[in-house]
Image (cartoon, rainbow, N blue to C red):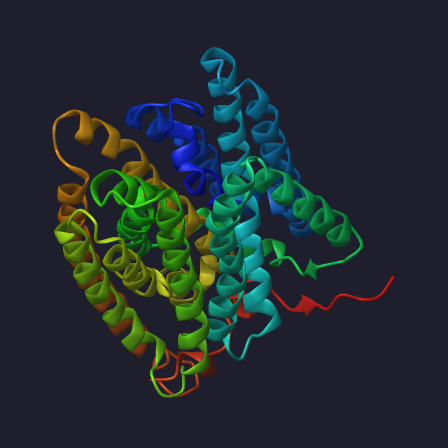
Length: 407
């Protein structure tokens, strides 16, 4: 769902489609960022009032409404004054749905597998990534069939099915005891949270440069076909997903902190290579964006699991905080590229310049990885190099899980 709009970037900017400028396309994501940040930050507090399950269902409902608004905009896409406000409302729904559901899903993953938190969160995010892989493929197929709006139609149908199926599930996670929750709320987030916040904001910039602007780079600078551009985006998200699965499987041989230090280097290389792409190098472009996907793959889920383990006293709020600052980075990359292009800076130059953000990300990732080696020594058992052996932050900070019961 989150990738539906970037996957249809060529439709939104095509004169035969919505006819948006680069600046209008970038600004379209402003409501998404605002509502995603608000949802992620408010989710933990809202869960204490109405329950975690209800927050999850609300997020699904808002996501479904977003796809419905996008569908409604399709017949009036030629009328900019009508279609663009509908797109803004739709992206607002996408952001709110994302901000509410993703932290809850990460909490469930951590709580259901307390002995292997990193692997559980990586696997969950890999499953979430399957949809991001499918989106550009579906766009290419539906564009070829003559009705691009098939993508939001399929998304809406799947979200409706998921919502109806989820209503039947208890999905209970015991709340933090009231006294402990009050003490955690009074303390607020510890100072070291900002290390994670800045890191994930930089990650959001790196991911969004590839996720939102790869198709325009491919069709504009590389002069590839729309199908090749969709394939490049699918390759990016496909490697994001495969990387998460891979690193979850080989956690015993390549520990999560080592992966965390390595991936920013892959991102730096991918951004520099993107800046060097020339006209007609569609195949090379697909490869480079696949490499970027590998570089992005495990950084977001590992930041969540590392942060929860590092800050157990406020673990229920860490996931939401990480998602919020991820969206800050998303917004910076989504909005700033349009004005930079208008100022005469080319998209390849912007991609190459983003390597600097990846470099700073690498420095911060090294600091976080070092902290993870110190966490087991602070009173926890388990092998220091094997993050999956540590107790779950969610189980320590959010109480025991009540497993779903039939009926």
